[in-house]
Every structure is written in structure tokens, then in C-alpha cells.
View 1: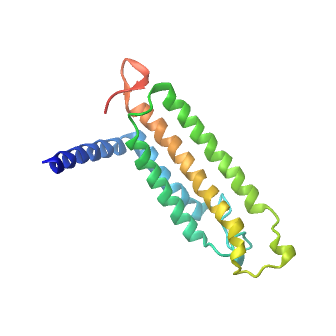
View 2: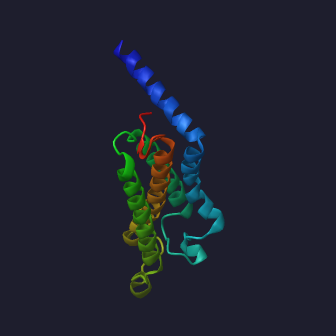
Length: 174
């Protein structure tokens, strides 16, 4: 019996999530999943390997893009699952904080990407695992940038989607 109640609760939450994604705000929030993939085509944020004069020696740009996409998917699900914990102006504040965090991570990523490495002085081999000392923080900053932007989009979308008609700052109970 308990499993039936849990299954019904899961289905109800899943329906709420699908209804949110079908709204304009949910659609805009879910499009942010494509941001890491779009960078593969637009190349606005540098993500090149050594063969293309980039900073990555061991980690591949495809792996980093796939990981960033998975992180954004997780952020969408996690943010929606916590929709009842943050209300009104706190939701807007959280969105701005997430947006600022995302851009701080982008600046950090770019600083690490263009930082002149010791490998040019020390002459590390191209497959040396020491390169991961630079590449893992760059990968984490890259993923965190997209996660922050995605969370900001989702929070702003939820603010508008769950808004009560009589209060501009309070989301209604879904």
C-alpha cells in the first residue's frame, strides 16, 4: 500500500514538472540545457584541446560538454524539486545570486584557460597526468557557469509560473 502512495505522489510531481516545462517559462528554463551544446557550435567560450591550440591536454571538449549538459539537467530537476522551499522575493534573490555565481565561474574559467602554464617552462609531456591540476578546475568552472545560469533561468521561470494572481512576489502551491 505504501508503495502505491509513493507511486501516486511521484506521478503527481512528474505531472507538475511536465506542466511547468510546457509553459513558456518552463520552456525557457529547459532550453538552458542546450547552452553547453550550443557552445560547441558558436565557440563563444573557448574549449579547445591542445591539437587546436587550446588549454586542454587530457580532457576532451566533448567530455566536458557532455558533463556540463548533464549538470544542467540535474540542476533543472533539483531546482524544481525544491520549489516549495523558496518563496517570493527570496526566489528572485536566489536567481540573481545564481546568475552572479555563473558569471563569476565564467570569469574564473577564462582566467584559468588563458593562464600561462608551467608546462611551457617545465616541459611536461602532453599526456602527463599533471595537466589535470589545471584541467579539472577549468572543467568544474565551465560546468558551474552553465549550472548557475540554468538555475537562474529556472528560478525566474518558477517565480513567474507559480505566481499568485493577488501577490506579485509569492508563488502559489503547485
